[in-house]
Image (tube, rainbow over all chains, first blue to last red; front, side, top):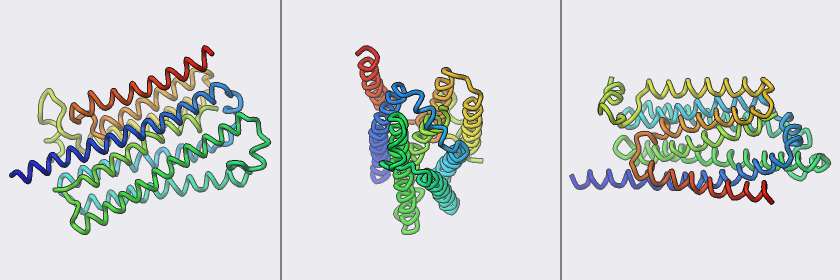
Length: 202
Length: 104
């Protein structure tokens, strides 16, 4: 009985710890969004020009991909708590696949930018007006940092799957998967703001 | 099904967790809002466009936080202490930055 209670307390603690971390992440990206809004305010015409270079289709596709992966992640936790581990694995697998899709689309998008001479400190980029340089600097920093979060999320889910097969994580001890999912939703929320601000402002 | 039982229990207070139906409803709402934001951006609405786009993004974020991240069913500690701290901190540094930029 006392073991059961300890487990419950442990779960709350683990989740609140994760939320604390999520709050620091919100502040981290909040600072970057603030930077973006100030530079945009000061260079409205340049930001408008530069955002025309982004593929709205790629951005929209990735938004749908990420939202869908959030759904599969949420359902994975739901299934895990209900004790259906086979379905949990399947849903986590789907989440990982969608995450990979997101990165591949992002990769093609960045590759297209690189081909047009748009990457940090590129000779062509430096000939553009200062506002556009700022725009692309922020674009690469923020989507890059976001992509790192996607990769980390995939790593944690992968570790979660491994732990499930080793029996360290399961319906009785779902914290790892629960927290990985919370992190994954955070990644989704950040993209929800990145998408309109970079792709839809023109 | 156990999902619906979970959703219905508890009368006035929100149930412990959303079930399949609410997850898919939230998902449908998120997809619709994405379509809406893309359409609104191609309409050439001028200055108000950024406000519309940000409102839609905010709504989507709140949906994810409340339902996917279960904030609606979370402990008091998170909802009424931690979240306000984050919001106030953000508001302070956004507010101070803008007063500096606008009135310098």
